[in-house]
Image 1 (cartoon, rainbow, N blue to C red):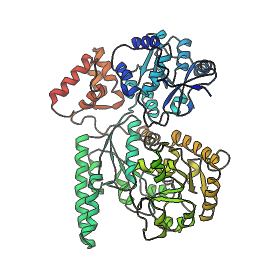
Image 2 (image 1 turned 90 degrees about the vertical axis):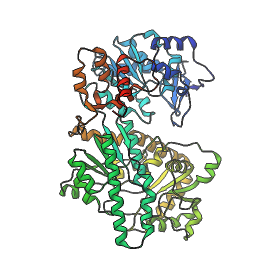
Image 3 (image 1 turned 180 degrees about the horizontal axis):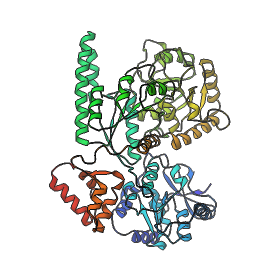
Image 4 (image 1 turned 180 degrees about the vertical axis):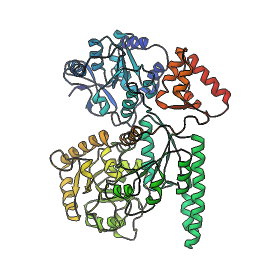
Length: 614
């Protein structure tokens, strides 16, 4: 392993750092580099740390993972370039490298070629460390650093894209979006949509909606979130005010009509290209019909068991795309009804679920040899007494507090926030993940879909023991020496395997590490949303109506600006959006920017005189 050293203990080499800053020149990037935020620590599970390779060269680690060879990073950089060139020569337009780390691979690329090189590095801390030790000023005029996704769109078309894999692996968000946006430099496709996410008022789909919104943002889309949670009290109050079923149905109908109009008001204000709705979203069939007639496509993610609810039958035929967490027979049922169904399993949001270092108080409250986080479904109420004596702690709502299991609940029937869930997972040696069922005493032998908890526990770097599910094998390696999950089939095997893993912490850690690697690579909301939206775009989805008031087709704006090179260059950064509004143009300029161009100043004045949203 390389010898570690802190940037604070070994400050940047002043000559190299100052020369590099002079090369970059004054502007917004310099301001970001020199801001306090560029050197602050964060809850990122992969914070950058300066280290030294065996040959003395500076390298970088992230979350304990080396981003370069710990022996000869320069030679490794040469091999990276040789592999890149094996696929063909570099275009005259240049190269866009996704991922900087210390930058040995980029130095090798600059030495091997004469073309311009852009480097996308969204972590300002990594960029600052590299600027402190690497001689970038020796390549003055050829090397350009990009830290914002929006800046990728301004790079000249025709560049070749190269990816630094260790950087991509240790960045939770942004690289899928960067890949997609960079791809638009090679293909004339729309990569950024204006999307409205509509969650349920409350319930298990609400955090999924939040994760989906975060994933859409990370994938480069412009996202608004219709927060229905303030209406939870009103919805719950309906059942508390009357015992008459007829009156309850009338009140629910009035509430549904009110929520329809709230959503419609948001739609008319935002004019989205796409509406993404989650299961139980407050959108009635009547509203869905209106939206379809008005040309607003709705993509619906039904993250529920189709066997337990039937409302999907009235919703699915009215939406543009209906994504589900189960396969057959559900997909066949949808097809028989003329519905375009799509399998889209759950995922994790690594900005919320990541390894936590807990203070002693949190460890005492949340920690346990064995733990479970979830609602008290009947099968769980009957199952957990079988392992209650193994140091079990239970968190979540809807548990029977008159049951002896209540002794195992440190916070009985308290709703836990996603942050608290992540702390519970991190503090527990063996997290039991028993999927819910209302028909079985324990494990559902026919269980298919995989719940979000399977991905969230893994994203925390924590260990879980999960009941066997038929769709699990599509998502994780289930058996053998490279297994990414630990499984049980019934109460007896759960108890036996819990005891086994409690006594084999190294085995737990290995499985947890592989599971975390798999989730961060394949099962984040950013990946899911990129897959889903990308598939819809490939199938023909385009902005609903670029002629809507306050929005302009970008291609038409660029055509009208022909002859004004500065304005064309400025507008090119919006090409991926298809259509754009004034407030979006102004939002791209950024508040407090020092080096305002004449084109940017023009749009800022237009916004000032407009007196309202674009």
